[in-house]
Length: 508
Image (cartoon, rainbow, N blue to C red):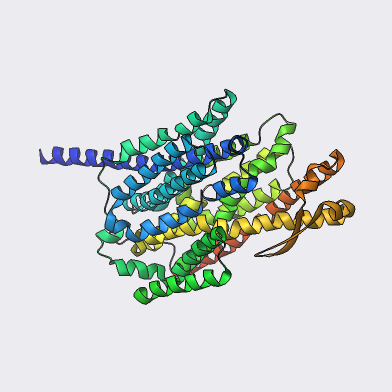
């Protein structure tokens, strides 16, 4: 009888385990739905509500920086307030976002709706990453990769659903309402479940010890990224940014008095080129491919759906792949493959662009989940804070540094190429000088361009497309940098006796 009771309890625990995991998975599906539908509808909103390109860009931008701030905030308090309360907050933010957006009558309601959705995404991801790591302490990399298959799965489902609804001319309010479908599913799966105790808490590692793993340098990185992001939004001066960073980091340092683990700091820094390679490039791929795909009668958006499908399938089967390569080996192979794919994309045309996109997709598939797995396996004392700081640095870093670099390369290459090959057009249409974090450049006079003759329009448009391809060549250098770091880490762990996960509690 005791054996039967034990077997029944184990079965019930496994069922609850799976239900909670798939609830966490659906959180990322819901996040993808929000991202895809807003991307599909932005042009329509621009026409209907008279939004300028700058206003549309501001609405897109608020999809990212509140996520970073939210995930950092909840990471600091999540062990005190609990996973369930954080998820309730996320659900309220997601639901309010949908309602406000459905009834939007202009810029501010769209902006606030997107802001709330981003805050909900940050709070939710502050939960799902440590929950899955705690549920599978001996297979963290595998299960974090499967968890993060939720994002590309959501991209595929939302992409197909969105294309279908737009084809049949559904009202945009109805399209936005479909975000509630995965939102209600994750609420149904999660809210009546018992959340696991974090591995750090279960092992008796103190809150201060968790902060010491991240340390002053870790705090400096994430605080700097968040403050510079807010500074660009509110037009703060450089002095204001630096003083604010110094004050916040000093307060953290006064209590922690630890610089942080050097290996963890290195992994944080690697997240910036990693996120730029994946998220930064994804934001242009549809744009880049649209002219070429039109030649073969297809929409550029289908390529994003295609690459997302590859990512989703491979992440579901990440276990054997991780086992074969080891986490660092997989990251090294992925970095090399992504670099080759990006170089290939920079000069591909026609259907060949699908092959190039396939190589790029194979490369980027395991970046995010595997990096989170390495951090969780090597720094379990860092708990939710170390894990979520890593994701936050990636998300905010691509907005503060990665996207700025890639945008600057496009502007600079457009300016240079048009001047070299079409000097007369350049002198007439490119005469507004701007300066940014990485230097000065001249930009197109859009008023003159609007009244230009078709030959000049074609010349300028082609030069802009070439500049995007030049930017892809620049992005391809990022995974090469990552590859060198991963090779160094492989030799570092080999010197230490091999890569081994650190277990605070030696049982699953």
